[in-house]
Length: 404
Ligand code: AMP
Ligand code: MG
Image (cartoon, rainbow, N blue to C red; front, side, top):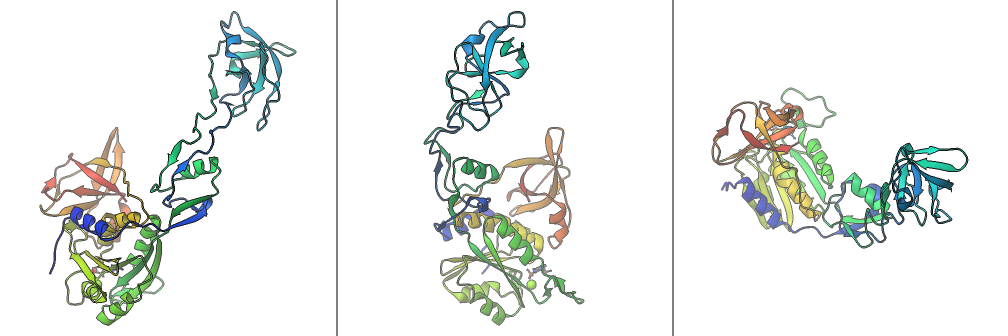
């Protein structure tokens, strides 16, 4: 029985079948890039904790500069220099200025910084300022970046480099993140050999387990390549029986309905409820199997590398994020296609393409070639989505784009 679902139906079914992950761990901030935050983060104190200069110049009282101009500069007594990393020891007296560098701490009594470009030393400690400054000019107020108690990161966010930066600013050396799901990856097929083997006539090197492992790692999960399984029901059954410790199992190849395609049968044999659907109305990647056994998701992806990749991106990746308590947030782009593309109504087409900017428009050049060609996804940087109800698009029409 081949129940064919739409991509949206398949995705909803997968996400509903596997609960969101809740397991957490405390890890070093330095190892947290790309991990999913599992705790809310708020500032414990004001950031910065003191008013700072944003310019090299002189800390002053703004009111002492009022009316200053090139013709009639305001005169100040330079009371010394504020060293970086040190708190000024004395408050600023009226009519006084103190040298300050970008990032220096403002002395008590000052409320603005005059840029060095607008000043002139007159000899001795006398400085002339030829332009008025307003209160607050060229300074960052205490708490202007973050106020004590202000929220800055939420659970479920995937940590980016700038998030690591703010965590450092707040003094977090450890962060609580979702545990990495552990994913077992198998390639199936009698024709496959490992990459270090010289293929004989009729054999090819295994692409999928390497490519899929790399995709798995790119979404915060741990990939365990479990090798190549021959097209034998016994071998596949034996391999699947050893997957109990994983959070997710990916197989590629053997997902069609050919006489040697045993993936669906072996998932069903393994336990309940078994296969939930077999087939998604998309191209490439139609013969995709999804099953659940003992609460664990099993995917049978098509063997063609580009098909396996599209199946992974559309239906496995969102689940791996959900398992970490994160929602997948993909940037939404649209681009104009260079040429007419036909598509059979009733299935969603994903066309490999090269995305480029021309003037202020995004354009996509389709890359032709079958799903069996790894070069098409290597030469491309995007997939163009032709919706299920569409019979194609015309040159110049705009389509949805998924970056790859
Ligand atoms: P299958 O899904 O097993 O019918 O395989 C479809 C096509 O993908 C066949 O041409 C296979 O040789 C090829 N293929 C299957 N698995 C892999 C793999 N791991 N790496 C590269 N090509 C594969
Ligand atoms: Mg095969």
